[in-house]
Length: 109
Length: 113
Image 1 (cartoon, rainbow over the protein chains, first blue to last red):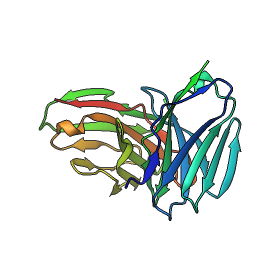
Image 2 (image 1 turned 90 degrees about the horizontal axis):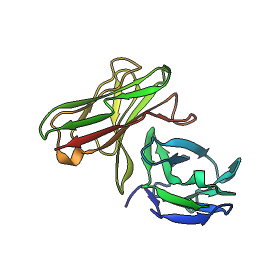
Image 3 (image 1 turned 120 degrees about the horizontal axis):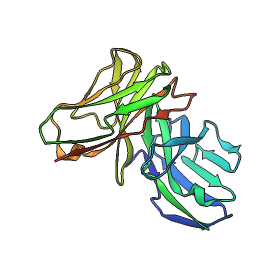
């Protein structure tokens, strides 16, 4: 079983809609969780980090963490074509990052 | 320029050859990481370093060697390259992965023929 699982997509949403990206992890002791965005041919960039149960909002992005269900999600409100990218979920365990394989998001104008 | 750089950006080598990928950061971050990215696998940690002269294995360390004699440099060596090591390699750095962002370099695309 992989440490971090994501649906590979592609997830297609119309412009202005809410995009919902999901991630599950296997190590119940994981403490820190991250969402990265990666454009094709580019390096990953951090969008959100979340450390405690609940929601964390930053602009159009909301990260949600449920440690009991070992589940992390990212909501993107008012999706824009520029949000089209691959979104990587990452979990930190004792200085080691484990990444999911990423979900490709397509936002259609 | 400040930031994190990788060299070379592209490399083609033959099976069995030794290859070294370079990573340099100007922030004096304590932590540095090497990842490989393959289709369908996302990013996988090869090795990381918490400080100069301190390194530890990640998820996929076999076939790779690292060293960190200076804080700013973290070279990754493939001792005897194999076709399965064809990948995009990313270096990253962070002041502290628990509380701070991890910054990625631009990547090195390595092809082993």
